[in-house]
Image 1: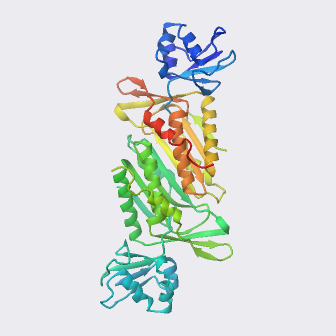
Image 2: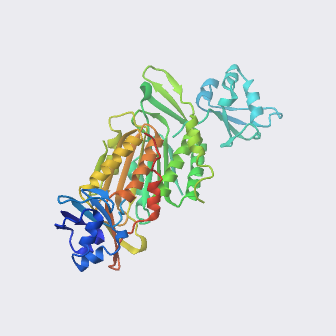
Image 3: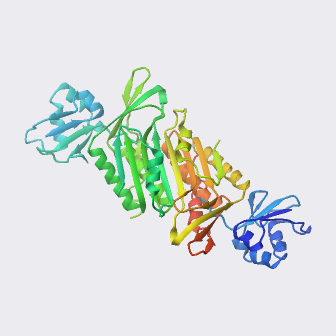
Length: 83
Length: 83
Length: 153
Length: 153
């Protein structure tokens, strides 16, 4: 599974992208967040307030219950501020 | 009194502008329209349907009851179609 | 104060837009509406007549009203007159503000007003040689009326 | 189909506008919104990050929705990324239609959407050396929400 980070999530975690292989019990975005938050203190800090984090699965916005699978591209980022 | 005509009123009356001296009983825009309509068959035709005619007195839109005086500039035209 | 021009000549959209942001850093958005001559029903040209003097005054007054209702940093209205061919621009409204809503709303307000209250008259000329004066449209009056009482200030 | 560009380079407003009317006579109006970088609070630069791939797809999708909701003859969205200085343009939305209301409304719809749903993130850099990520604004969400369910088609 490919995970991307943008904006301050990228800065806090210290990488823009990582290849991960979460265990089978990680089935949705919320489960993936919980699992990622345990990878390092930096991850824990980045995901400390889930209300500040948005996700996309395969380049579509996705809520906490959205399923994730082995070949997905999952991105995490703050609320968007374009325009 | 200076009277200006625009668009099809100008075309029907055959002039863009005329200098007139209506009698003292012509006190407002409606009275001026009635008086002008009697000046010629062309004037009568131009003012035949007063609902199609708008007026300005001294370059401000004016309704039928707006007063008119000797030194005024009074304009008649159809509803505007700019933009 | 707004820049208001009534002229036969074409105008330069890029230069007019640049003038609203040149040398300043408090402009967050520039909204614009460019009205263009369509060739409906075989139209070959549009001839615009106006009331010199009154037209400029009336546009300056409504632009001042827009500047009072919305916090604009700049406002430009250019309306052409004379003979205009299909595809050519007729009118340009530009509004600039720190925030986009003020720019977008005031731009719509001004073009709705120009359609219903500015002393311009359009005559359509057709390839057949026929011509006719454009009639005012009730939907334009309705669009202009929705601004009455609304907005800030 | 809309023209959608996400790029670091500046864009040419006049050329983009001209492209929407070139060679056609069914365009009655072109509405545009140009978003510009302000220098609030001593800001020295804005740095825009995006999600390559998703950004373009998301904009193309919303532009297609605008084209379904309003009878547009053309639509262009250009959003810059990277480092942008105060006074420089950030985003351009252009919509063209036979009638002005469709152009004006769809332009406002697209810029409201870009502010709340397009995957861009802004970081502000200040003359002091400080920097901060811009936070999403509730009023932008409200502006975008007013389009839900409204509009034609």
